[in-house]
Length: 117
Image (cartoon, rainbow, N blue to C red; front, side, top):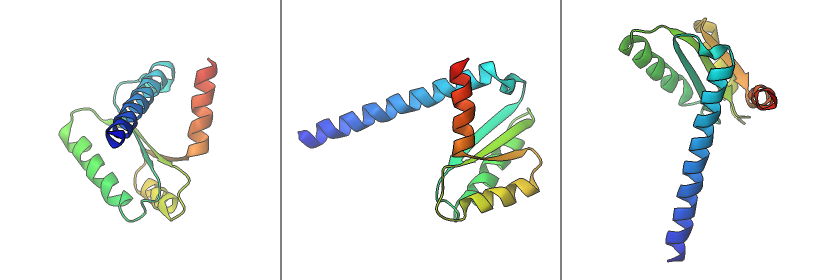
């Protein structure tokens, strides 16, 4: 019974966190220059140097060839990885002009500035 209660609590907190993330993204899109027409993608990763490039290529391929809209901006965020994830993200940026690489601290500063508005 205790295990069920703990699992339920974890799921409730996870859903709450997801709702807060979606709410913040909607706020950023409404009150910043991200409200232009087009597709914007924010991908956050941590310690995924072996998988990140394949995931990025797969996601971007599906979006580029599955929608009529043009990708406006892809923001790749590194969440203080201990491996070479940030290096992989920067290499991916060199191949794609619509990609921006950011760190968690830079994104936090942007979000903090938005909260002050």
